[in-house]
Length: 495
Image 1: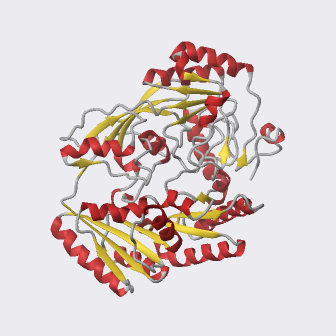
Image 2: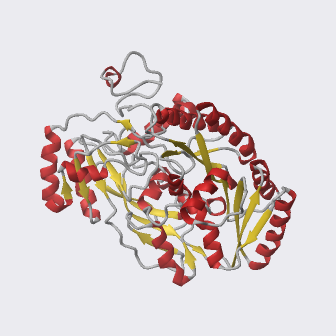
Image 3: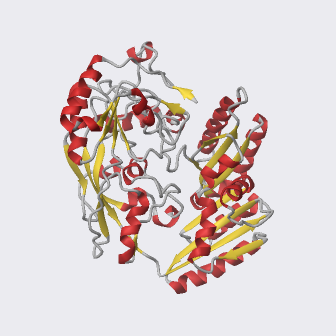
């Protein structure tokens, strides 16, 4: 675990807590250390900070009042939904407010004619499809954590999921957002219409990881449930053959709803956790799902079977019904948590590479792991090259946690040099911000900072995340000379 320096709570924070109690109610403002420690990290437990104040908002006005009072006091705030993020994006500030939106769980009436629904940010991802199912509709983005993750967090991180290969990420399924800006002003970005003139401010907001404001209402696009769905589980004796199958499918002009891959270690963990019954002796498995018009699915499915055979698949199973389909997905959906069955501790990493480079990148990950005496279980969205290496280690062994953290960072740099990205869907947050300079030029980062400063000139919305240095909005972007006061104080670094 990496300790984050915690500045002393200032008198202004203490004064702010009293103003917050008056605005949103005493029972919704937590300051007792034993209570606020519940919120000291998100799904990435490697970083922990105890917030000075936690506000449990229950409606839009609570969010507006909290943000406005933080702005007036000059106190930083961090918005948090279900806390399932895996990059430290919801890591609190010791001198600030953690604004929890998980109680904003209202779902509006489904507009079946226009295939839309409006929800609050605390609504759980899977609840949207649950409410849309009676209308033969569904919400496409489906992170593995969809049973517990919230829509607000999905929007903040631009979450994807197994079916993003065909249907796209969260950004492709959000039509509009009501947003509380960092000064407390409420604005509406996008709307119910499919397209809007002017700058795409909604697109800038989605994936901004809480640095541009807090969403209080979101209008989501729904999709028609496909006429036919076919799912197959394919076992291979080599990772190369499994990866080659993925490339061959896409090269044939077929875009599956999902193509997921797990290696031997990930399969071992899933079997130990949920007894999913994957092919015995498989070095890698693919879960391939096709959907669409029945005639098209049947024709494409035959093509995929033939491609798998040519790539030396030794076992192919076809789901006969929804129950068998669910069992095939069960192992994949439980993979992250299942790794706890085979390792005391692990890092969940997230990076993207061109899918044609899967075999060589996976081989290099194995080599780097062997060099450090560690193991890596690979679970990923193979169709779009979104890797989720799980670095296994034992934190009871001196130095092993550090080695694992170093390996996780090296994997991200490998993704960059392979023509990919440091994140596909987990976000940058606290964990990866120092890698941003590896992927982007200083000019790129300055341009991003200009956008952030336009929304948040005082720099109080989730500060210290995404960017490698805590650039101040009053600071002119471009080449810097001399030592910045923040650097001199030991609070920031220049890379």
